[in-house]
Structure formats: structure tokens, C-alpha cells
Image (tube, rainbow, N blue to C red):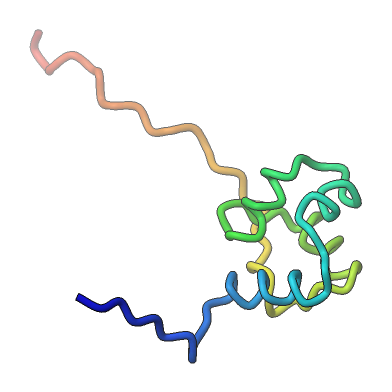
Length: 90
């Protein structure tokens, strides 16, 4: 079995990683500049977290906006509770 990679259409994160590599910018350096933990920078780069403030700071540092995830400051709300109400007539 042979594994074949198609690099003709790299995703946004691969392009971002390539940009950082070419410009010799480490995620730990970005974390230092932003005043956040390096693991949080990784979450921003992957799109798992998308805080508007930090994404705007990355753009101001010269990271192209099209390589970053769309900002979303919508805070996730609490998890919905299971309906624990007693059945009617009980």
C-alpha cells in the first residue's frame, strides 16, 4: 500500500505553518509577543480558539489575515442540561 499526499491544495493551517517557517517565526515567540501560553497560540492557529483580540494582534505583527481563522468572540455557553424534571403525574 502506498500513501500519496496531495500538496497542491494545502489547507489554511498548512499555509500558516509554512509562512511561519519561511519567516522563522516560532509559536513560542508569538506567545511571548502576545503574552499568552504557547499552547493557546497553537489553538488559535488551528482554529480551535478564535479570539478577535489575539487574531488582530497577529495581523498587526504581519501575519496575513487570510492565513488566520475568522475571529469569533462568541463564548461557548454552558452545556445544556438533561431534562431531569419528574414525569407529569408523579
